[in-house]
Image (cartoon, rainbow, N blue to C red):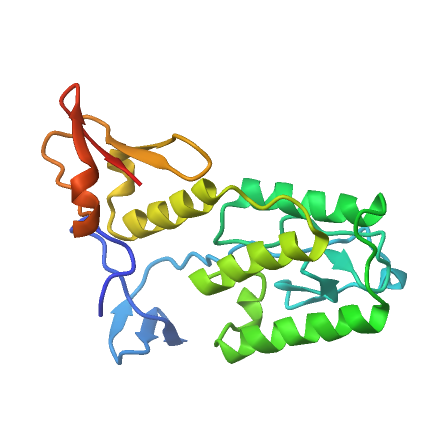
Length: 231
């Protein structure tokens, strides 16, 4: 199996999903088994809102999916209530800002919310699309796919007619995600140049050879002994 985590130490082994556990023996989906002394459950974040009553109309399925939310922000049953920052696998700070501006625009009259039935229709279409893409319930708020992230940024900004996230933030996030999957991002400093461009500068690791697309090589320069790429 291909490692999901790049450059694992030699004393660590990455295994596929667990199929079953019998005593101290753990069986995996690839048919292998290992003896385990300790098992640590990595459940990820769980959504919990104990301060909300049933009257709020919010349901949290399996502690992973908060619904029903219009654009994954506005409580359809009580549209003066919002949830900021449920999503993951995207540039969270920029997204928090976009979602906050979206919600404020519904309160100050800049963007009047559609009818309740229209919001439900949009919500159901959004969930159906995620299920069609193979997104399971536990990752409903996850933006695992680039097309999902890009579509969400555009949808939120366009719907409320508010300023978009600067392209440089989105492009830099995607590049960092790509480099992270290769185990390279810790060696690079990412610097914003403008709303559309950013620089990648090596941090002094002389033996590091970054992998970049061939069409980017022409933009490579050396400044003070460090390689720099402009995107």
